[in-house]
Amino acid sequence: MEHHAGSLRVNLPNKVVDPKTAGDLFHRYYDEWKMADELGYNIMVNEHHQTATCMSSTVIVGLSVLARETKNARILVLGYPIGHRPDPLRCAEELATIDVVSRGRLDMGFIKGVPYEFPASNQNPVGVMDRFWEAHDFILKAMTSHDAPFNWEGEYFHYRQVNIWPRPVQQPHPPVWTTTGNKAQARLLGEKGYVMATLGSGYGTRPLYDAYRAGYLAKWKKPAPADRVAYLVWSRSRITRPRRAAVASWSPGTCAHRRSCTCRSAIRRASSPSTTTRACFAARARRAASPRTAALSTCTTAACRT
Amino acid sequence: MLTELAKGGRVIAPSHPGFGTSQLPKGMTTVDDVSYFYLDLLETLDLRDVLVVGVGLGGWLAAEIAVKDSSRLSRLVMANAVGVKIGDRETRDIVDIWALMPDEFNALAYFDPKAGEHDYKNLPEAESLAAARNREAYARIAWSPYMHNPKLKNRLHRIKLPTLFLWGTADRILSETYGRGYCGLIAGAKFEPIEKAGHFPHIEQPAEFARRVLAFADTGATPIARAKRA
Image (cartoon, rainbow over all chains, first blue to last red; front, side, top):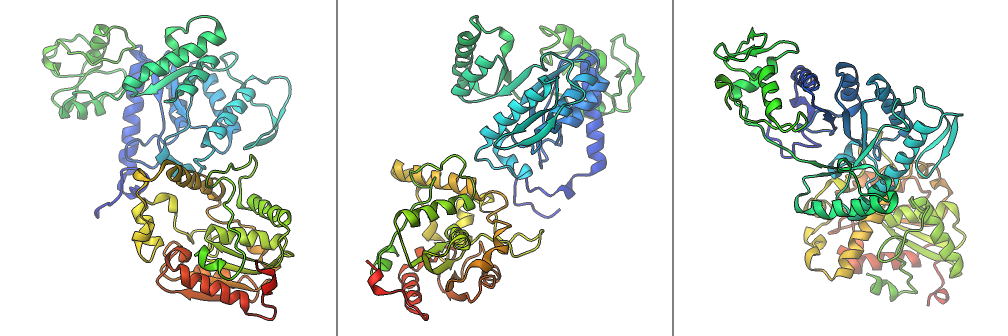
């Protein structure tokens, strides 16, 4: 294609994505998530818009697939950009339904969204915090009101008969997560008892955690449990090109292996010479500190050494 | 430009609520809202026979004021004004200024882009704070529908004041087609190009801009009486 003078985000024209390839990728990742569930991992999904860097443009599709295809994993959305969505009632209905279909495995993350994604929703960046909190208040009220339809005439949203069916499994509502980089917000989140996640915050993390813990202690009169804070990183895995291609061809319930590998799993000859196998993942997971630390430790199986 | 203008009469140059150092009152979220503030101001200062000059967003405001109550107004000058939609739903009439880097904006908005350059890093803090607040307040009131009030076009027939559209011809944020289309919506409005100026003709051609405004004040069946000028 002709030279693109812009970014990977927002204005990279969508003619450059092949929908069939996109479909292949989505199915690969859904397969990998299913595998992660089988191996004892919890799973997180998120969304971005109008970008080559992440084609999951709606968390709800991913959450829906996971609600049905996984059995044990907690499913965290981090997050649903509720400050961007024009209709928080729809958000409440979607999330409640996912909680019901997943049998109560939803962890509900609300976020404000990153600056370069305002073009996609056309929401005003000025005032997004106010929109976010009104949407948050509304969604929680929709999930916890059970006696009669309620009225809502707020600054940003108006509804006259709110009575969501189904209502969520988890009581009073799925656990709430959110993100922040701001100490005042961190303290507020501690007071609310929400899980606070920070993204790549490095040395700035400690002040945020301290603010959170101060808020939590002030409100709940006890120290914040360790699971109230979370840290997000990007990590690079050192999977070589042949293995990357082979992972794409893995399918659930089977294991494709190099013939010389000694792992004793059900095997099926893969099209490429070396593969990362289900058993290999399992071996790595066992060697990791716990199934939930997604560490790619060095596999001792000779054929699969990375 | 204001200094030049003041040679011809009393000039009141208010800073909009939310701009500069003032607060945008809660509940004031649209240009339509802000127009009521100015109607209040006209009453509070008991102003009469006012010639309203609006540039860009100011033009939009001037129109919103005038369609509601022109009783204290005598003339309208609309310079490179925004506020209505002329094109169809898929045509962007006004360049998306919030999708531009400053240098891209200056290239489109000014006859001489250097006129738009600001050394934000080295401005006194009060000035850079004001610049940031201006940008935020502008976004709050003009974000969507983008730079216009869909209702305004249907109300412009209410303006019966002598109206002049001044148009910096180098403006590539708005087109001259847009300006002439807007002008055509106000009965009797005249369209006058200003050369060597873009979207901010009062900045790039201050003396000429002031001369045209004062000349407009003096023309017509009832020129604004000198006695009413300070």
